[in-house]
Amino acid sequence: MSFITNNCTFRVLNKILITQCEPFACSENDLNEFFLKDCVAYSKDLFGKTYCFTLDKNPKKIVCAFTISNDSIKAKLLPKVSQNKLNRKINNQKRSLKSYPAVLIGRLGVNTNFEGNGIGQELMNFVKAWFIDEENKTGCRFLVVDSYNKERPISYYSKNGFKFIFDSEEEEKEYSGIISDDPLNTRLMYFDLILLATGN
Ligand SMILES: CC(C)(COP(=O)(O)OP(=O)(O)OC[C@H]1O[C@@H](n2cnc3c(N)ncnc32)[C@H](O)[C@@H]1OP(=O)(O)O)[C@@H](O)C(=O)NCCC(=O)NCCS
Image (cartoon, helix red, strand yellow):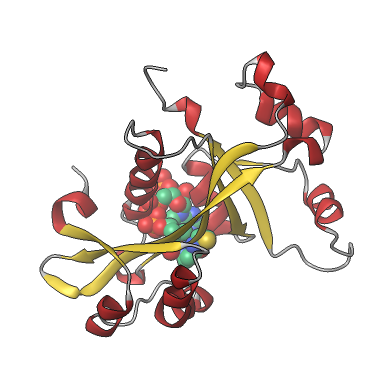
């Protein structure tokens, strides 16, 4: 039984909803700030759409929220090992494509009062299901995320089947143009939706 589908309502996080709800509070303040102040302008500029689940018994409470945008993986620009990893399940004729269609999970958070109860996993299953749905308007092969380089989010995305695009932090720094002494604040990860797609 899924908590978010049985006890919550799925909504676009727009200006009206933000004013009606308590400020969203996950454990990353940057994200809270974004969901409170920036996501409406972001959506207006067509950079990303933000959605949330509100609690039915207290509709002012946002249980979890996420922002998604169209994206692509330019496999040819990646190290050979990364290309091979991505290509593993791509059929031979399509391996020469310049880029693979993807959706970026730009922001994602679970309200601290609800953390550690499987809500994050339910939310990820919900997002995955969207992009393998036959009604999906475009093709989308990969989910991509630039995860905070911290134990909890990395463990969360790994648990949900995401893999690192780059084999090591050193390699990711090199390809991202980060000088080697600077910390790597985020790690690029992907999920291949073909693992879930059926009937194609
Ligand atoms: C990361 C986050 C989304 C996880 O949400 P959640 O609802 O607590 O996640 P779940 O309960 O579904 O847990 C799924 C997995 O995440 C990992 N995880 C969750 N809490 C964790 C913790 N305190 N420490 C380490 N790993 C943790 C575990 O792998 C867990 O699987 P398990 O329960 O089998 O061990 C949530 O902690 C959050 O909003 N964090 C702040 C924002 C953020 O970091 N967003 C992601 C980066 S953009």
